[in-house]
Amino acid sequence: MRNSIPLIAIAALFAIGQAPLRSEAAGENKLEVFSWWTSGGEAAALNELFNVYKKQDSGVAIVNATVAGGGGSAARPVLQTRLAGNNPPDSWQTHPGWELLGQYVEPGYCEPITDLYKSNGWDKAFPKELVASLMTKDRKIYAVLAGVHRGNVLWYNTKLLEKNGIKVGNTMTFDEFLAACDKLQAAGITPLGLGDSGIWASAELFENTLLGVIGPKGWNDLFSGAMQWDDPKVKQAMNLFARMLNYVNPDHSAQSWDQAIKTLMEGKVAFCSMGDWADGEFLKANMKEKEDFGWVSHPGTDGSFIIVADGFTLAKDAPHKDAAVAWLKMVGSKEAQEAFNKLKGSIPARTDVDRSKFDAYHQWSMDSFGKDKLVASCVHGEAAPAAFQQALNDAVTAFVADKNVDNFANALVQAARDSQAMK
Ligand code: GAL
Image (cartoon, rainbow, N blue to C red):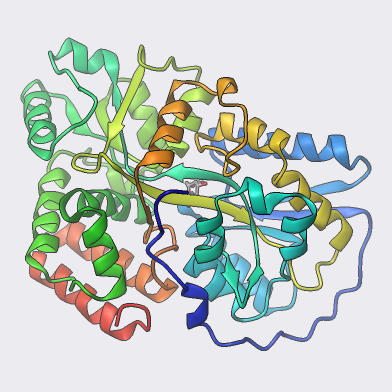
């Protein structure tokens, strides 16, 4: 990987955790996999992983333990309760960075899988920097990535824009975006679709806008504590975020992220700013790239790639360890990465897959991953500890209602002060 990730040596920040006492004995011929992949596109992609697994390890009954709710906001508390209660699934979905290392590795819930990297040639197949900076603690690796999503994508309904005389080029500035929104609004069309029944979706709109204003260098400064959350640039992003909220559907808080994407498909809204799991929904609905839907980097973010990567862990004393190891081996295989990511919207984390098997959106994202500046997502638990992620969600909830920039900035200044990561 050409570009470095801002979370260098994150692992060094954690103290060695005390592993909890375990009581489960190895059970029947089963494998329990925990995730929050329940939307149409997510479930289809997860099923592909199960299909590949079944081919390799027939006879194991897969228990598909999902907890619905985009971004995992409902799933993670359930998982925490299970882990704290000594009742782990064999393997669970995780974002690398603080989520993996802070919430799961540090308390001793995970078994390292460093050996699998050696025995399967993964040390050559996966981006070294990403594995080293976001998935390693004390030289041990704790997850294997299934795929890498790009968070900062602006999707649009091609026909609706055409009908309204709006052309989107290869990049988009905030001015171009706001002008398009004004035009649509004047024509009686809701410009921007949002589904923030899970507040992370609004937080994501803010995260994308923030990157568009402060750029990747500002991003690294902000999450390392060199830039403050009340910096004029950050406030400029907050003001822009407030302007964008003027263009969203009034029922946004009653909708989920995938329902918002559906309204885009139906031509009820023109744009959605959402990570490329949205592509999984378009694919599931048989929408045609470019003809029915198009994409561009979220305004101002061309040249940057917000990483939202999905990995799987091995539970400490996994109830079905052999099945779990076979699962992880499968997740890291070329076959699985190709089958899964084609449907999920993400790109394979492996850099040695056959690119010709992927569609135009995936090619675009692969190119971006290869040449752009990579930054870790805060909304998806990578760039900052869970407490800060929660503080951001709370501050966004308040801001969506009151649009008070000073309160928004002050809440985040305080949260950063309370956090060990941003000093
Ligand atoms: C992210 C996850 C993606 C996608 C999305 C919406 O946190 O990394 O795989 O599932 O949530 O649920």
